[in-house]
Image (cartoon, rainbow, N blue to C red; front, top):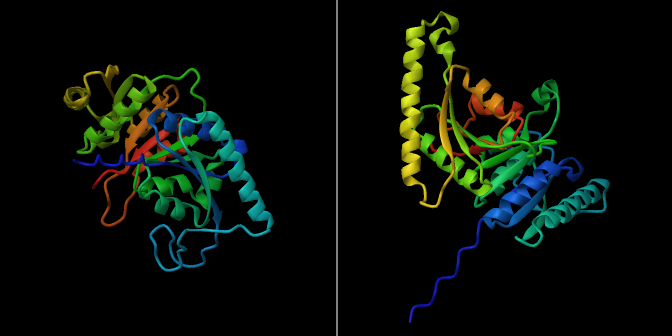
Length: 307
């Protein structure tokens, strides 16, 4: 008699916590996603450690390995413990027992810890803080570092975001070999959210010298792009489950891809893009994805796609 195999536990949704008093949008979005997908929630608060030498993102000498820590009786430790406890309580109220919620304090460089902990996670979720561009230049962006190097999809939620009055999942494609994977992820999310999908392709007219491009050439580019989207959508529909009824349409805009996607995010529930292909040995986001992580008015899903 064959013994039934033990069910494989669902991978957790990893949520990076900073200050729950300003992270309502992140907690609510993470709670809904985990509950509808049956994924346990693992909240992580990283107590920042100073790294004097090396590069903690690339793992060069000087980087600190994340490890669990016993909080001592210090102001920083008490604050970290308090914030994690508060965030855990809030998100347990949101999921209302639908999934398990745990919290953990770790020590190290925030981005490095989250990248390391992303191994085996369903996804990482972070909130983008509302800080000035000048400050962001000098402090860097944890969410951008994590999105560029994580081992799973990364969702970045703008501070203060609300789904009220928004509709639709927008999938950004760029005539790339990974577009099928990006669209498949977008369709999965749209099915979970019960939202329609728009596949958006922006024509980079700068490559045609902008206003100097003749109308015939621009029309040819747009026609080829529309044909490409039609084929991409047809493949996605043929591979989707029979019970998937998500509305799916394509749009080609004669605009810079970043501008087109940022504008679409003003009314959308979610933007989905892929991480740029690897440059030599180093993962990178690409200009379009970086622009979305800075400017998009709705959550952005970034997929770690093969180069």
